[in-house]
Image (cartoon, rainbow, N blue to C red):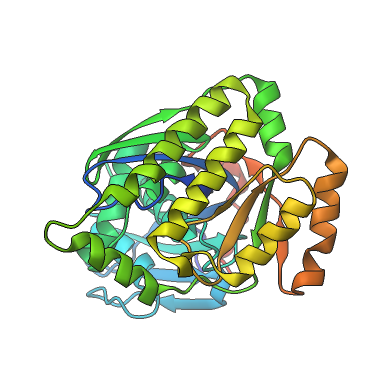
Length: 358
């Protein structure tokens, strides 16, 4: 696109860490209790929009910045290069008289087990929603993002990641009938919010999460007729305990809930807690950490959330020693997000000099 757009539309959505009660937000769980935390870095979506000059032939360009790719979306839409992005564009009923370019970016590494794909979907659908006459609520956008994966792409997924990206902050999710859930945001005093933010460390394990075989075995066991789902109950209890602990500002109890959740994950399948994660946990324990949670469903690669003790030196020394375990390990900067999905249009006066994206 070489012409100046008539408008620029922006949307951001936080990623998710520390998902206690994960595995219970699923189609096989029956009901779920999940506590998770929305954090910066956000996923970003930006649309450069201009009037179309070819009636009935909308031009859409996708710029997947993290992958260094820029390409024209075919008509009819094919799920070819980046199926999740293409399916999001396909599910929205967009005007035919507009051409636009979609720019997508996330600081969080792909496969970090922090719900980055869900955050991208929520941000993209949120930006596209500003092009349609009817406005969706953030909750509706989260459900639509989940439908993109299950209905358009035929994937199996939970609902907690999309809801966390839509709402932000500290979320307690009660899933009463998959995928329908209510979301309560925990409003805690600033001193608790700031203390939690200070103590949390997100450790990327240096490679994308990959455990489809292990996950398949766990899921198959739960999907079997008359299967015993009692192993999910400790996960639900950990989420509820974490919620109560944060309301009380009790970081010892919050750390215990994180550890209880980790052991409940291990009981689902030992391979859900990788040797890499164990090494990080051992180092964290050495430096006085109170809790740890394998982000996402667990397995190889991905990331771990650590709850450090009260002394800043313990946190700093832990981060300094990470590379001694594995040079690929990295502490990613995070900040608790008070907001979930944010959508807005850039001021028109800022756009007059725009000459097309590179």
